[in-house]
Image (cartoon, rainbow, N blue to C red):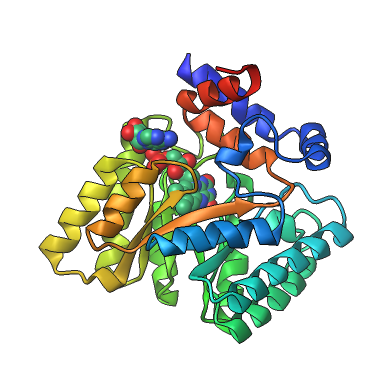
Length: 305
Ligand code: FAD
């Protein structure tokens, strides 16, 4: 049943009609639990509150399924506004973005133009930028663009997903760039041709890539809500004498909030991924796919307790 629901919500997450409808009508159906609001001031308020609790942030100006150059340029402008707000209000926050929102499905030159604008603003304001990883179809292109940009800019990182078979090779190949990588299990619906179908293999591969990346001496963001992965990382760094400056934990806004604070209290760097903006639909559907309890939460929001 859980698998059927997961597939259902992942299917819905790709629906362009609902994506556009959602943009028009604002945050609905309990999405506010996972999305910090629709505007920069909403996001600033949320980041401030998290920073006051000792939590670092990466802010995500939500956006996917861009159809036109104008929309992609608007999305890039949104990212630049977020960077400027981070600097203006002295917030402890990085920026995350998706290349599809920068025009990846339109042309590579458009993406590069938008990314260079964003990275110039980020460099000027000392803000680190992470390129989120999307579905398998776009993984190779995303890594190629990341490598090109990494030759030009320092303050840029990306994400690898442990459910993909290719990731074990990607992590070794990327070592050449000494990159700051976020390591995750992966949030999209992928075929068994390209991704491990069994959760156990995905978990084992996440542990494997965490070990490889840390042991290669690279900065590692372990982005998971899974205590098994968190405990694995804690034990590994202790055993290998890896400094707390070389890694951090990351979780999504609104998920395992108490655990986030506990990790801060234990002296670990903990970063919260805070999405905001009116393009919330796909992100919200992927969170519902991950956990049936989230669906119950939404149903309560829609139908009352
Ligand atoms: P899961 O296997 O989903 O969950 C493991 C365990 O965690 C559960 O059994 C439970 O014990 C605990 N848990 C999970 N959720 C909850 C909850 N709501 N309440 C209580 N306990 C819970 N994916 C991408 O594909 N690309 C990205 O760029 C990307 N960026 C991400 C950035 C961040 C900061 C994070 C945290 C995730 C990101 N993801 C991304 C999503 C990721 O790939 C997973 O889909 C998502 O994190 C769920 O996997 P998990 O590691 O938390 O473990």
